[in-house]
Image (cartoon, rainbow, N blue to C red):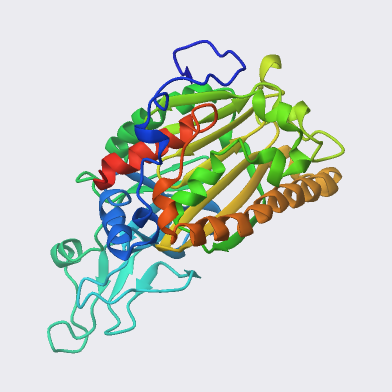
Length: 394
């Protein structure tokens, strides 16, 4: 197995953490994919204990944009403030706890609760509370406005993605940035040649998946199925030419050294590179899961993200977005952008019936006797081990 510190061989090495699994069986029980108690435990132990994907910056296109999301079962608000900074708050009024909005909206300077018309500035400060003192025009003094401000959530934005950490006790942006950067450092170093500030959204689509969130990740990291389910991406030989990569326990995946040319062309012409791409990386495809719910796919000229929300043991909602360099937003690339997005979304759509059937199969008693294969499933095993460690499966 290739790691961040080892030279890449261009070959899948059938050794490592899966060399001697117990009876070769999956490291997670079938109930981990079907049970409501297990799902609820994962919400708390996996999604509420570290940095997780929560949304896209492009959902907040202008100052005053407010976008409600749910992370680990908790309602949150993504907000772009008047200084163009993205903030995240708990979506709960400080009076009686009602959610402030359940639909994306754009406000003029204040977010208002419909129950008693308390309103909050875009930085979370309580601005108005009508008749707070049972008299007309009762003002909110600065001390009260600060004490009853919306509760902030630690948040960071990278590559157009919004991440939150519900377990963080410190929400200061500089402190959060240092912590988040340290966690993502191996990936930032690997992709240091990419200018993510130049990203331009081509298209985003929502997919409602009839499967457990872990199956979504495992399928994304499963390179074995590609020639059988996605024949347009190339023959079996293409899947054999891959490096397993473990940048850290929370960043695992693989890389095709020649993937951009070893598979069928997605577009008739090249798009502009996403930055100053070295010659030895123009043909490379990188595929990573940033645990638990950000699935990233990078080539030299495009970037694909699947961020997802686990809603139930058998339901996951994906938000899949395709990005290119901003120079590729020019009219001359319109057909190429459309062709690229259509090809990438088509690959994702091919997985939908597979995921549904994987979920259905988890209800069989035989699902507790499924076997991982050392030659192919090492990254899947590492992902399952990470889930097992965090959620307490034994």
